[in-house]
Image (cartoon, rainbow, N blue to C red; front, side, top):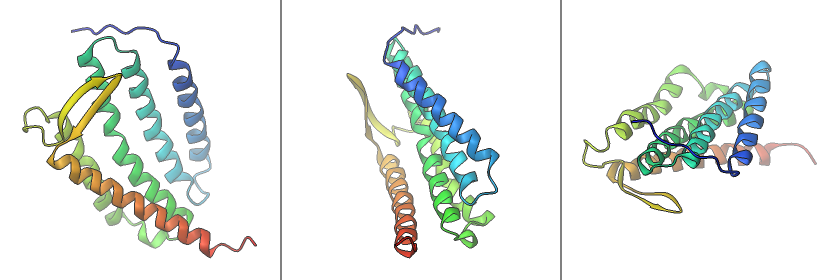
Length: 173
């Protein structure tokens, strides 16, 4: 089935955001020897993918296509959160926390989310219990959806804690 896509002028801010985020990500990857630059480039990479899926969902003409791009858009949020924690730890100089095992343990829930979200229909809607259309796609989390939301919240709180700790410790007076 080939879906129809239609033009809307609302894509131009999205395309601009994609271009700017990609440019900043490429710039930070070129300067990855700077503390935090590699993590920031991964944040930019996942946000570019999320913005591209959001743009395609915005232009999709049929409901199944909109739901598909909505699900693809959601796949990149957890990896972006893990990358933001890696960025904060590296930028704060807490590189000892960033070893291979820590990154693997942080990435496991994000990697488990991908197959679960694609097989959500067959697994009794464990990720999203209900999707509906009201000016845009809305979703009610399922049982595992709340688990992944909680994990994302914990990662975000850890990132914010590291950044607040860095701010308090800074000597910019």
